[in-house]
Image 1: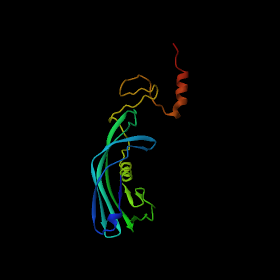
Image 2: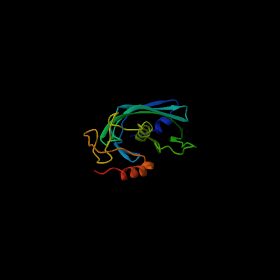
Image 3: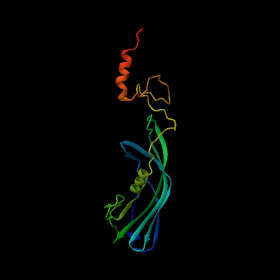
Image 4: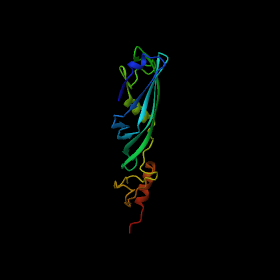
Length: 176
């Protein structure tokens, strides 16, 4: 969704409200693909502060589907989205910030709401996505999902620095 700021920037100390929608359906983050199932309905409020600053605010929540970090099954989770941006405007256009450069959510005389939503999703993204708090993950030996069935594999992870001691121990085992 894009919103033209041309009309509002010519009116100092004015507000305009728009009903927002999210047009993003898929995105990638840290090498994984995610799907936005839905976003809660929201209203975007554009407010001019004097004649030189534009304030953009809205709040919503996005329901996202991705893979569990341990067992790779699909998981749905909610991410809060709270946008509160103030940008400088001049002659109906957003002025790039001197320190960070042009804004990713500005396209000429339009504000790209989807880009604001995606930025907030990435900022509020969970550090670890789990299907359940006690997810057992995938067996590193046979590859079975240990939440579904127990495989009985020896999955003891030994310190690689101790591998030579294990070799010595195995060579002196009594063979029957």
